[in-house]
Length: 157
Image (cartoon, rainbow, N blue to C red; front, top):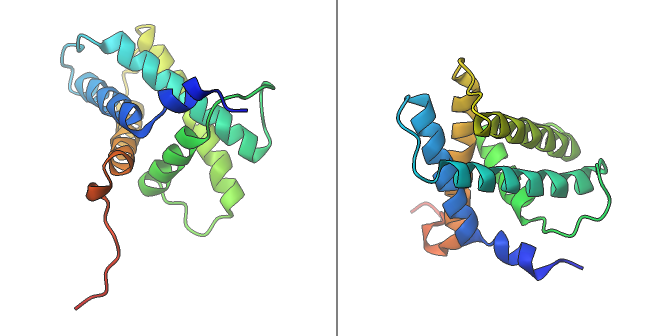
């Protein structure tokens, strides 16, 4: 049974706030600006989100690292939507995309962890890539949090 705390913790509004704050601090790192006041909290929340999303994806892929997942699949679903918009893979099988998402989320989590420990990569390409991911994730989550920002298909007139 899903723990209510996990569902509440990863609601669209709080998750969107997390994505925006992580995207903002990554922007500041890329452009060599001072760290924001909530630097560590934002990184911790980003790492926690990526952990939750990766664990949910591992269940779908059948590659669970530890038993007893009691979270929610919402972070994985939102991350997959952002990943597909960010790095479309063409006509690959869906299960292959899910495995790539899980692998990418783990890489991003490890990168955020190294930034948290003060090891910022000199090559900003990795940081720019994760920045773009969190930018897309924020967009996906804001559309979830506020349905009026969603775009819908309409018949051309």
